[in-house]
Amino acid sequence: MKTTTDQGPVVMVGNGVEETAELRTTSIATVTRWLLDERPDLVIPEGSRLILYFLRTTKYDLDKAKRKLMTFLNNREKLTEWFKDRDPFRPEIQELLDIGVFLPLHQKDALNRQVVVIRTAAHDPEKHKQDDVFKVDKMILDLLMHLDETVSVHGVVAIFDMQGVTLGHALQLTPSMIKKSVESWENYPCKPKLLEFVNVPVHVNIVLNVFRSFMSAKMRERVTISRKGSSLEQSITLPLELGGNGESYYELSEHWKQMVQDNASFYAKMEENVFHL
Image 1 (cartoon, rainbow, N blue to C red):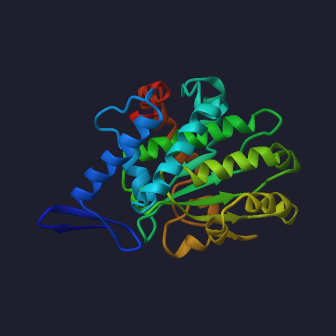
Image 2 (cartoon, one colour):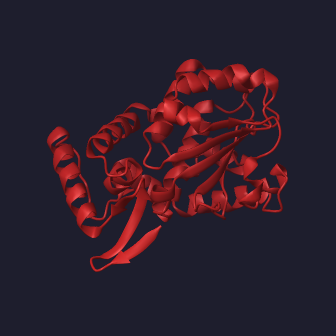
Image 3 (tube, rainbow, N blue to C red):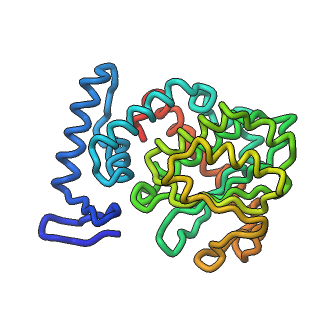
């Protein structure tokens, strides 16, 4: 949400915190100085929005922004299986883009939050690595933030469609894999506002309990589980497969595959320096 004052536009980032031009400029400068003291090897190009995004997601709590930013940077360097070799034309990435494992909807919800459908059982666990699935998820999430900075203000609602999930899918999600996934979500520069698991078979509850065990108390409060459809049907046009009248998973997959391919240079630049976000 934006308002305007004599000093220019003001962005409301939550809990009554107003992002003015002055607050934005001084806070970015403060975090930049700290970061370059901690990591003099980093290069932060002019126009980078990464620090701004972390300030917004922490409502300008500088200590929290620093902590989350450093964890994010460490994860990018440590989790090479997710953040390296992100060429959209690699065969394993092409296959998962065709399947449509991570599908942002075109319409925002009633609170202007970005809604994404994560199809947890769309891939073949005997053929596709879970690490590659997470890689594609992060590629599209990064592209969302690159294309639309309001995602850093209003956050993300994730609908996990578990239709067709099998034991093979569950076995891919080891406790260490789940821990990495949760830590990444909690330290990404966009707020997870709601994690809604739908079409959940009873036998998957064990895996979901492991997910929740690694979550912060605040994130656990944002988890909902349904054996049927999404509660968002009143506030957004859902895809056909979720009982709505929106685009099908196939149509969304086609769109996002093209978007990812069209932005191949963005991924190359980010792999060179994450501050190109």
